[in-house]
Length: 212
Image (tube, rainbow, N blue to C red; front, side, top):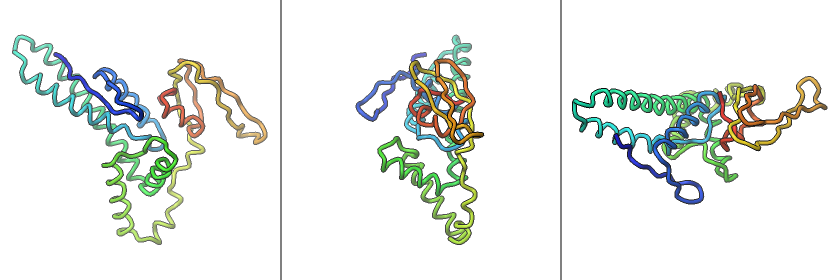
């Protein structure tokens, strides 16, 4: 069964993405989102592309003949896998937003002001703002001010990462036992490290490291 072609708008120019590449990128985004201790930059454009693919695949399946029943079953399994991945990705992001919408909103606005990749897409941004307003009305300003201890302390979060690109270089980490000492870790391709999240977050966002 032929898959529909897709295209996605990159930051610089229009980039053609094959269905296979879209699924690969969505898989990486999904795994990173599940493993990251905080909300990662949005990849909802990939979700939109995959939803179109799913619709096209469903239409193709409906046109198949009984003589290719095994092929239809295999395509249905793939369709279910893609549907689960996209739904779970969206669900994971919503849970993180709901856990601390004010922090997410502030982080999104900071990233946009600094010219970094957006934390939220337009729909997520609207949802977050509505959630913040609803929370404020329900709990009141005083309660919210006293609940700042709920903010994530990302400085102490460690994650497993795999180096997926060549020439990533080295990263310098402070020694927790001796503030005056540092550790230098070489990030060689295919290596796996347990490492603090904050110093390598930008490398994950650049696609050089993948969270496990």
